[in-house]
Amino acid sequence: MNSHDTQSVHEQGYEHFRDAQYFRDKYEARKNNLTQRAERIRSEILPAKREQAAARASQYRTKYGHEPARGQFEGTVVSYEHALDTIEQQLEFLRPSSEEDMQYRLHVMNDLPAAIQDATPDGLPLRFHGTHIYHARSILQSQGASSSVDRLGIATSYDTADQVSVTAPDTFETTINGYSGLLEEEGCVPAGCVFVMLPSSQEEAKAGDSMLMNNVNFKEQPERLFAIMTSDENVPNVREWAAAAGVGEQKVVEFFEFPSRLDAVRRDIEAGHVTLQQYVPYQLS
Image 1: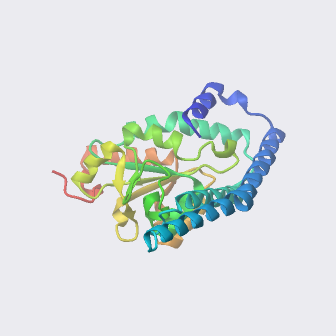
Image 2: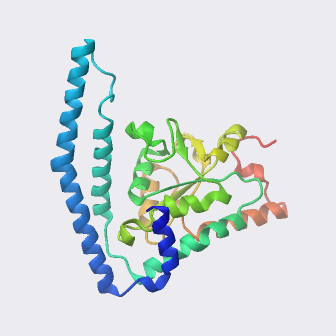
Image 3: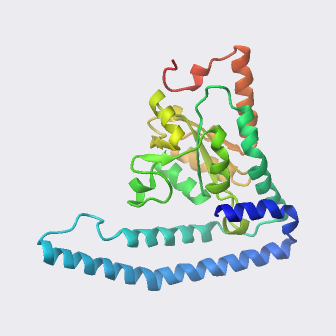
């Protein structure tokens, strides 16, 4: 979803959405579109791109007398393989939306950023990484958030090797509106997730200003995963994935439950019941 799509949805408001048949028709249209796109990539585009990559690799061997570096000519192939995998996962999760579902998603987009800004304790360096529901499953299965460059060999966001793209409380709107799958396939795919993490050092906390953060291994550094936000619809599944990964299912919360919990932390800190240091995995100055 690009910024124009987000803006148009905000301008349209809730009146844009219709009855159950409207959403059923949307679902069927999105399913047909995704199926056709997947088939074209699978049967036409990928075979052609693989042939091109093989030809270029052969030319390289003839010219230089040795094998090209791994992945030197396969970038486009990997990109389309990733696109195909994404479509197949979208089809796996695809289901009709509803009036209630879409109103809830717009509520999250419109109201969650301010709620998080208001609830975040002063000095708590929270970092937010949004992703689609199927990618959230992959993150939990791998027990960590890592760069697309490290996973795929290509960049799918603003992240680079060994780093993931993140926002802070005052820029959280970018994550929730642009990277959390809230309006993916016109609402026919469940909303995504937001991984709430903490930096490992003062230096990394400062690097958050550039919207980047080092990869996080949840198994080795469980204290750095503060929470996982998602929709009420997704909470049972995401908790199941988290439990299977040994991540801590109690960290999975509904979108608006998170600022409520965060506000309780803020009040406890202000009352002197706990300290900010208890929540930060490095020594505060």
